Length: 317
Image (cartoon, rainbow, N blue to C red; front, side, top):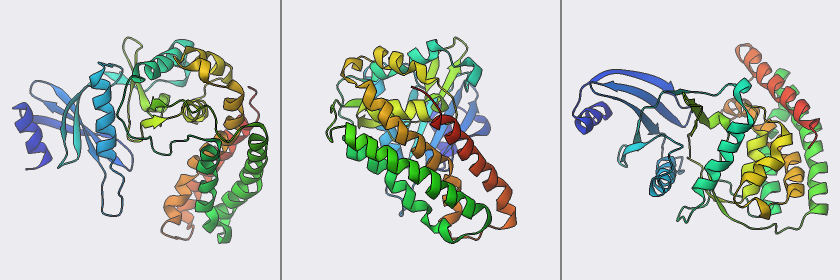
C-alpha cells in the first residue's frame, strides 16, 4: 500500500491536495488536505548505511508528551513503523520572527522544559553530555571533519584558515580555561531534553503560543547542553542578559551553575560556527573540487559563519 493510500484508508477520506512543507535532508514533511481535515505527514530518512532510527526516537518523545498531556507541540494522530511515518494534526501557525522574540516567549521555552520533566523511560539524547569532558569532546571532534579542506583552494582554503587559525585557536584557549575552573564531574542532574531546542524548531500560533517541533535527537541529558545550545543557535539572536532569568524559570534552575554555563558557552559558540560550515562537509564527503558553481554559495556560508562568530565572540554575559 502506498503512503497516500494508507492516509486515505486511515481517515476514510480522499486526498484533495498534497504540498511539500520541507523537513531538511533527514526527513520529508508534507501537508495533505483531505475532504474533512488537513494533516501533516512526516517521513523519516533511513538507509542501511545510516543506523540512526529517527522515527523511533521522535515517536517515543511524542509518546512521552502524550502521557503527560503536554500540548505545546503538534498532536500525533498515527504512527506506522513499517513505513516510518508519523501523521500529525495540522495547526495554523508560522515561524516566529526575530522581532517577536520577547521575554514572554523565552519564558514559554523554559516552561515547556518544565512540562517535559516528569518521570520518563526515554533513552539518552543524541550527543548527551554528562561531564565536562563530554562537552569538550562534542566540540573537538567536529574539527577533524574539516581536515580535508587543508589541501583545497579558493573558498575551501579560506574556510580551513578560519577554522584552524581562529576557531581552533580560540577553542584551545577556552578548553584550557574550562579545565582549570571546572571539575570533570559537574552536577549530574539529568533532564528530559528536546536536544535540538530553540526558536528554529518552533511555530507561533495566532494566540502567541509557541508550538515546539522536531525531537529526533531528544532524550535524557543534562541541562548545560540544552541551555548553551539555546543561547548559541544562530538562526535567532537571544540576548545573553536573559541567561540568568531563563535558568531561574527552570524547575531545576537552583541546581545549575551560571558560571559553568558561561564558561561552556565559550566553546558552544565555536561548535555552532562549525555547524554553520556543515555545507562544506556535503561537498567534502564526496571529495569534490570546489568548482566555480559552488564558490558563491559556499562563500556566503563562510561569511555567515564568520559574522556569527565575530558577534558571539564579543558578547558579554
